[in-house]
Length: 414
Length: 172
Image 1 (cartoon, rainbow over the protein chains, first blue to last red):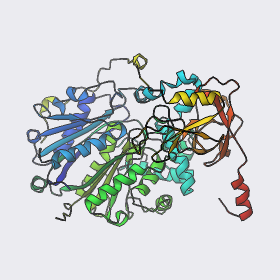
Image 2 (cartoon, each protein chain N blue to C red):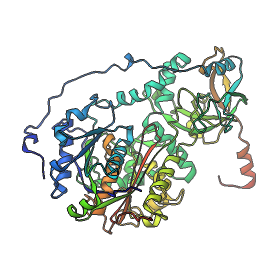
Image 3 (cartoon, rainbow over the protein chains, first blue to last red):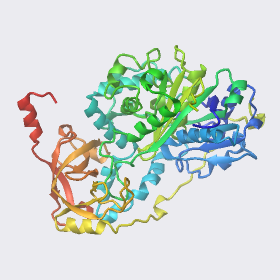
Image 4 (spheres, helix red, strand yellow):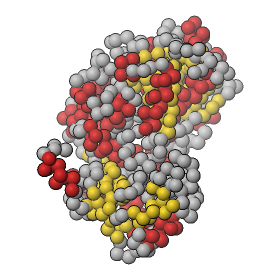
């Protein structure tokens, strides 16, 4: 669609952990930027035209971190944009990088997404998101304990457990199916250098042994809270051919928002009566595929990274974005289709289930997909990857970003 | 090319300082004009949904704007007291650990409405026995004050689908 064909030439990560006490937020970002520029060959920090930065607002209590870390991400004397859209922040930062190059205004764009959750209080951060909508309830006759019980089950994990309930009813998936997804992710993460939860010997029984957090999700199935950052370098088709060995072209981008969470807007009813339906994901996938000229995503896509903090979401997303038939994902996971050497490898980086630095997570998905195409990923799949997708999810369970990338520029029908 | 050397860290640990942030000091504003009629209905034991004339979507509790048509819905419709479970979860809270079984939290879809509402089910219902599509009935509060919790909770009623399925020998 774009006049200029945007391409990714490099993606960098910092090491993720639950507490990176050796660095502060700016230095964390610097590590990812440095890794990104190291992989980018002849590109120097002076060559960068435009910098985009994003993280989850209010989670660390630093409201303008982009000003703090200007020097650390080589943004001095350069135009700078900050993008935050909740859990999808990384996806939106990636999409903004695409737009900046596609517009023809900038040649070399650096996009940075990060989160240092050990600095902040995630509960306060989430409360700051929900308080606006919930603060009215006590004056309408909701007593405090009941509000906490009812709406407390509606925070991130609660929303996911609603999704899990509906998904398990639709597809007849069992808890064992959910645990199998976790095992695959955590074992993959053990082979990738930058991930957080590395568990090479975990089994399904280990996962099912842990207590429930929110039915049907158990403690062992839930994503960790990580510190981490991710940086991606965008450029035009011409420059990418000169710089990179294998330039990765961004051929389709879709970003849709659905009706907000199950809590409802302005104490009205919530329009999403089935939280696992996720029309936003279906729509954004359709848009991205149509831009990229992909008619049969289940055959044409070689590798997928989907945003799945909770295992039921991984099963749900791969179906919604068209990689598997509805309700067939649990069987595919059982048969090893999605494993590292399977026909359709999914989340070989370990996924969000193993590493969740919230603001960075949605950007790590397309970044990792791009590295798989380049052949530089930490846990590289054995087969050659030509087309890959990166998917992000967040906001009030409603905001989706979807990116389709390939080693060839998009077919133009002009 | 790497960034200049001076940025490289020369220490093992950062110094950490504490700070705090008072969320309750903020003010939030709400437009509740549309809810008055609904609350008046609750006081009289009547369930009112707000219907969009353009797409016939009924919201319960009422919503200010219909997102599909971008119009202000203004047609009040009376809804029956029956409902069904749209989705559910269980709360494993600190205080709830004293209970025999976890505290169920459900999203209810009132019959005749198109939206869901988070609510509670009777205390004696075991969480494992609830399922999506389970029919429910409103249990009114003893004293109705025209507030949200005038519907105290929902109680399960007999599901005709179960009997029907048994007769036909269906597995589901």
